[in-house]
Image 1 (cartoon, rainbow, N blue to C red):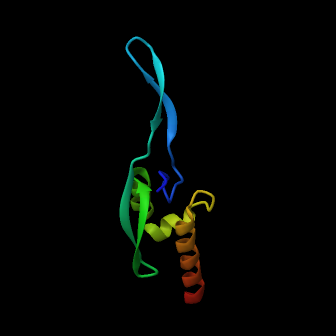
Image 2: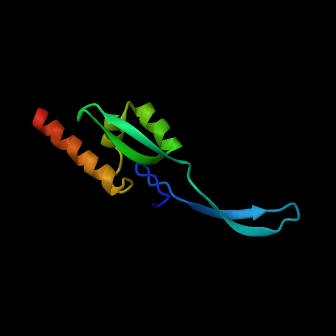
Length: 96
């Protein structure tokens, strides 16, 4: 399982551990990923995603999964999230 957020594309970063003696060794900064189930109001079902804590806050701020995916760039989304976004757009066109 890759360590990449499915909604924001946030992944591991690299940097240095710096000791008191100013010795530098390479390290990785991993994103804070959580397994969550988010409900889609338009589709009426839940989707299990592995997203970062920051992405979860963004989803809440934008008003839910449907609103987040409507504004999200396709290049940042995972294949699963893109599939959900397409399903949402199909449901929206069928409804209108």
